[in-house]
Amino acid sequence: MKFVYEALNWASSFLKEAGRDENAGELLLRHHLEMDRATLLSNLRLVLSEKQILAFQVDVKKHAEGQPVQYLIGYEEFYGRRFIVNKEVLIPRPETEELVEGILQRASEHFDGEQKLNVVDVGTGSGAIAITLALENPKFCVSAVDIAEESLQVAQQNSRELHAEVEWLHGDLLEPVKNKIDILVSNPPYIPDWEIETLSPVVKDHEPMRALAGGEDGLDFYRRLINDMISLLNPKALIAFEIGAGQGKDVKALLEQALPTKAKVEVVYDINGKDRMVFATI
Image (cartoon, rainbow, N blue to C red; front, side):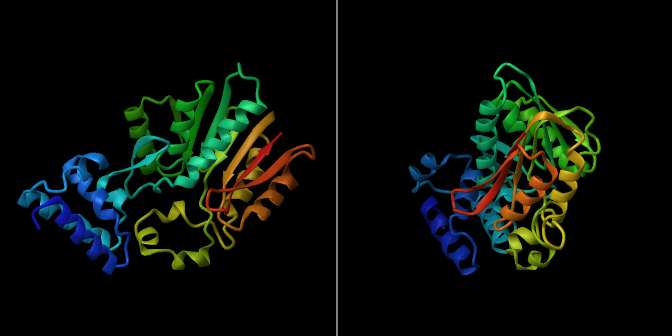
């Protein structure tokens, strides 16, 4: 192979044979050539150097073996911004963009537009949720918590790159949070322990297990969060959780048991028609 189109064809068939996403080759080649998609596709007859070909082949083979493309290229796009990712953080998913959108919309409806709001993101990982909320709404005073120092280092690097004001807290769930909370958001580990083995090797063998496993039924972190948040929430508050498909009914019930009777709890489905978010307003 010496042309761009030949490299793409090789990668596509190689990855298909390995049972991986055939389009990953394009992402990897764009990364190595530092081109956006339009530029790459308008240069299909560009001649690649031996060095470029070798580096590209190495990464395609790594992905075929199961390494996520995002870890190979070192970033993922989220809400129109580029976030650094590595093996210490979960790769941000498109569904989580819908969670962010839901928070922004509900916050504008639920709170007075002039007031500053204390927002806490629990289990922040790469910082994608916290940073996006801080940048999208200047009225949000955002704090973010993670139990892993390694994850916080990635999140802090992202906040520097994207010029976002976020307070980073190291600790277990809400333990380091001292201020009252107006908006609580979390995308906690929610995969039941028994289901971990059924995940794609790209996920279970490479993404951090602490960000995936949610206990026997996947609900451990919701129970703890809901129990701990009651004393920290302001009388008027918004709660936003990302959940695993099929967990909407259970997480809704946990919130309804803990919150005042006037609280409004709703399960929201994602673009793929799966119950993916639970919002509560009090």
